[in-house]
Every structure is written in C-alpha cells, then in structure tokens.
Image (cartoon, rainbow, N blue to C red; front, side, top):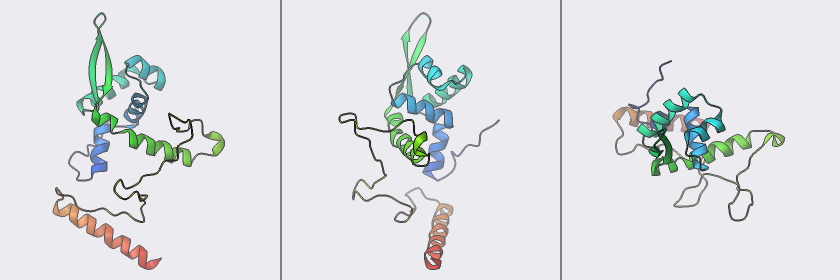
Length: 170
C-alpha cells in the first residue's frame, strides 16, 4: 500500500509525520531512546518482521534520525545511532507515553516514567520554555511562520474565526 506523503504541506506536524513514517518508526525511536542500537535488539523488543524493520531503519537513516555504523566485519553488522534530530524526538515519545498512561485504567498501567536520580515518578506536561506556563488548547493558537503561504494564512484566519465562534457560543 502506497503511503501518502505530507512533504508538500506547510504544517510542521504533517511534515514531521512524513519524516518519522509510521507507528513502527515511533516504537523503534522509543527503544533507541532507551539505549537500543542493534538490529537484533529492535527485532527482539518489537517482535517486528526483519523486512519491515529493515525498511523502517533505512527510512529513519535517510531522514537523518539515525546514523548507520558498521561494528562488525564478518558478517557485516551495523548499529543505528541516534542523531541530534533523533534525540530531539524524545519529547514526542514522552507526550505519547503520558497521554497513553493517562487514558488507561490505572490497573493496566504497566510502565511509568521516573526520575533517574531519585526514582520518583515523573508527572509530565508541555510548558512554554520562556514563561513556564502549561501549553493547552485553550491558551495556544496557530500563527503563520516566515514560510507561510497565502493558503496557510487563510487557514490560520479560518481556525481563529472558528475559535472565536466557539468562545462566543460558550
């Protein structure tokens, strides 16, 4: 099945999805962010078919999230090292983890995030780095960026108008 490309879209979220690829890639990145580097480690952890894993790793390397480095000559074997772009995916994994944990019944939560030094459970939220204010749908809007097209500016205006209508009708 041919996957739709979002490369031509203005939205950074859509373009990021194009870069990451699919849910297997997110899980591969999750495991890499916990220290996995080798093909067999990913394969064992995920229970993923080798052909699918090969394709996903190749895509993640081509998108600059991993660097492929040979660690053995006979037979040739490679490890996949996170690049700065790959390491920058960590907050996305934490946000998915947090959202997933929040919406599971408490007795089904098998993993928690903890502080490495103290072992205390982490309570994660997205905050504005400048103000420390929690970022929510109620206090955040889309704004056109420097590369915004006329179409993107119209979309932002439409979204703002819809938000204003919802505020007035509330």
